[in-house]
Length: 135
Image (cartoon, rainbow, N blue to C red; front, top):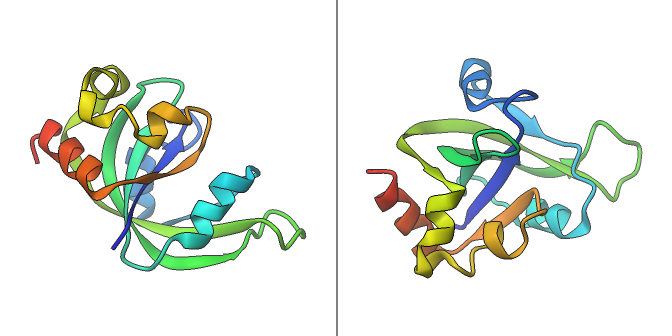
């Protein structure tokens, strides 16, 4: 299993809305590195859900329920989407400030590649985030 992080602006699509919907497709990605990460996602992989622009915190864990397919929002076959389902809300959200203050997370994609909307998460980073979230 691999771990990932996706960013969503809560005013556009929040964790709470995601939970209500029970599943969503992750589309609209127009960055090649983020697209490549979508392509690498496998069914069952765990995904950290990060609220960007407002909140600036990891709030939940999702899972990949359908591997990559052509993004339905564009006729261009270069762009992909995946389907995600919520797993659980974090007991305590983990803020960007907390992540930046944790030396063991200094190389996390969220920090190094701040503009990337779909990033990788190493197993040890995932475990540290879970610890910080009280999970």
